[in-house]
Image (cartoon, rainbow, N blue to C red):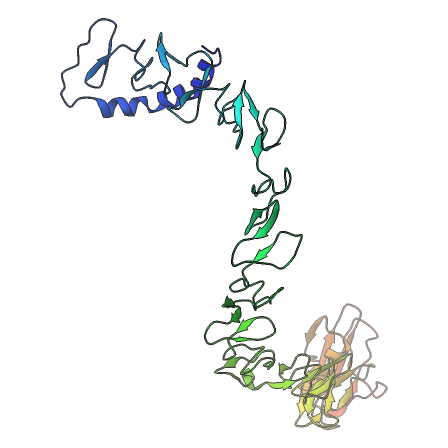
Length: 412
């Protein structure tokens, strides 16, 4: 008996032990009365067995020894010179002579025989490392075709020591071991090598690439020309960026846009496009903004489109004209549509706002007539807009709000 037999049977025993509870439950009799066994025997299901010697219940119920093995003292063992090989319940095999388990379980001699635990390859060729070699016929073996380790490719067979394509396949790349079915291979489709690569989405049928029904081969891809924005109605017909393809025709640009350019054509809002302002051929220069189809220096207001447009400073337009620029008498400018020298409380406030945006505003009660003053941290100025002081502003010489005099500058 081999000393390795118990070790090789240990995995089988562990698997059987895991299955034992379920198996015992399955084998339990339906009667609630326990089975009474003679001394030295154990109940397995409804029958009694000697677990020390029974090869079908060795050590535990349902632990079956390998074919040819025996149960000795509750342990399965193969006869001397044999080993348990294969899946449970396995079999005891002679490793010295078994060609499928020569010298070790699983060592297959192939076409050879086993003698003394080693493969005898007389009449054949031994391939593989010593001790694990197998006997092959290099004239027909696809894993060792013409010599050890030379594997034939997919779709090939070994014929006379040479890899050759199977029936119906063609070798389009000699020496590379690659065979193709030119009748249905999408990567090599045609009547002769190398065949054609079918478009994406196409199939190879009888050597011809075919797109699905309703699609067309456009530059190596199957597309639906009724909805493709890059192949609308026919291959190569591109809709403008922003437009879509419906029923094989490009739709109009959304929101009243205009198609401009060609690389690519793009749906454009001529009212605000910096590169296509007013029309596709007009581009605003650096520092300009397109407003209502006219280019104005950024920060200016469009008061009237045209060529050139009327672009104005100020916070509003006087119809289609610009607001006149007015002096506030202290070196700054404000804008208002009121004609010179029309002066109102509003224009006085605008004049003071041009002098300084900070500080508190107060109505000057001590000057004759209607006056308006602006108090800042550095001084105070008073603008009067009717009476004897119309059109005059006091300079901010002190923190006191002084009424203008004939010496103060005028403003408009």
